[in-house]
Length: 424
Image (cartoon, rainbow, N blue to C red):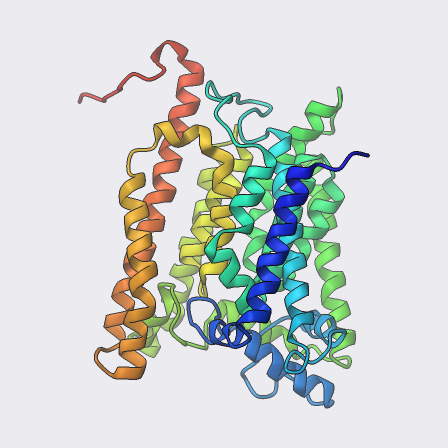
C-alpha cells in the first residue's frame, strides 16, 4: 500500500515538534500542568500523580478528597515509568493520543458526512478541506499543543469521543458504543451525546444497507449495549480499587455536586462561591438542566445534520460544564473545520475571534495579577472568563444560524446568497 507523503509529513512534523518541546523545555510541562486554563480538579496531572502515589502504596487514592479521576486511569499510568524521572514516556503517550485524534478527524472528514448526509446535502459542499488539512489544523493548534504538554487527563475523554464519532461515520455501531461508554465512564457528560450519535449511526447504516432495523429497536438495542459497556468499566474499576465502590461518590459526585471550587475558565466556580448553602442544591439542578437541555432541542431541530449537532454540543459542553478547560475547547476547534462550507454564511466571526483572542492573551495575565501580585480579586479573573465564554457562545450561535440557513437554501435553491428578512 503506497504511503501518503503528505499525511506522513504532517504526522512526522507533529511528533518532532512535541518531542522538541518536551526535550528542549523540560520545565514547560510542569508549568502548564499548574495552569488553571489547562488543568482542573478533575483532570489535573498533578492530582493524578498524587492518586497514583497513594494507589501504588496500597492506600485508597480517594481518602484524601483530592483525587476525583477514574480508577482505570491509575491502571494505565502504573504501566508507565515515573514521569519525574522519565518524563518523555508520558510525553510519548500524549503524543500518540494526538496522532490518534488526528487520524479519527481524517476519517470523519473523508466520510463527507459534514456536507452530505442522509437527509441533507449542502449546496456549498465543494467548499471544504481534505483530511490532511484538518489533521494539520488540529495537530498544530496552540491549544492542542498546550493540552499535550499540560498532560490533562481530559485528553483521554476527547480521544474516546473522536473515536466514537469516527466509528459512527463508518457505520461501526458497536465500536461507537464502546468508545462512548469509555468517554462517559471518564467524564460523565459525554453520555449526553448518545441521541445525535444514534441518529448518525442509524443514518450511515441506512445508507449502506437497503434494509435497516426500526429506529426505536435500533436505539434501545444500542442503549442496552452502552449500559453494558459502562457497567463493565465500573466493575473493572471495582476490581482495580480492591473490591470497593468508594470511587463512585468521589469520581462522579465531583462532577455532579462540584465540591471543589478551584478557579477555572468556566462559569460555575465563582457562582457557587457566592452562593448561600441553602440554595446550592437548587442551582446545581438548574445548571445541570441548562447543560442537558440543549441536547433535545438541537437533536430534533437539526435532525438532518447529526454530526453538526455533535459538534455544537461539544462546544456547548466546553462552556457550560462544571470544570472546563482549553482541552475541551480544542476538541470543538478540531471539529469546526469540517464545516468550512458554512463560513460564507456566518456573520460574527470577527467578533467571536476577537473576544477569544482577547481573553486568551489577557486571561493568564489577570490570573497572575490576582494570585501572585494581589492587584485584583476573584472578579478580576472571572470577568475575563466571561469574555472567553461570550466569544465561544457567539461562535457557536453563529454556526447554528449558518447551518439553519444552509438547510433553508437546500430547500429554496433560488434564494442562495440572497438576504432574507422577516417583516412583522
